[in-house]
Image 1 (cartoon, rainbow, N blue to C red):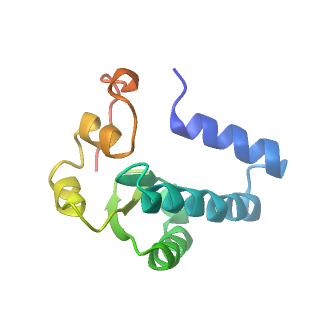
Image 2 (tube, rainbow, N blue to C red):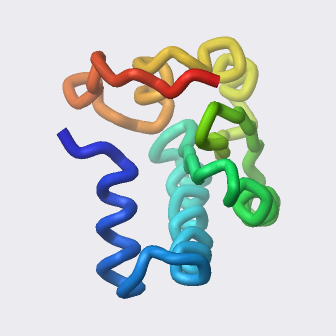
Length: 128
């Protein structure tokens, strides 16, 4: 089964012709704007990007700026290899619920708008 990162890598490589530094950054900025748009519009309660930890600083800056533009809340969670950056609706207590259920695969999928039938219940989230 393909995972989000598989689609991401394929798209970046297709459109940028490479999967390196500036190409990844430029694609990321547009991707995060698209995520913010769907959360802001109410298509889902949250969206998440999980770059490698070495890309966390510039991703954090982008997420914070884009969240401010769209009026969204943010939540950050560092794992062993990746840092999760969440964009969330500021209403409905989603931020607090996510903080309590950060390792609950089903909850994470549902707030991101993944239909129940499509949730991979066997997915193992990387340890912190």
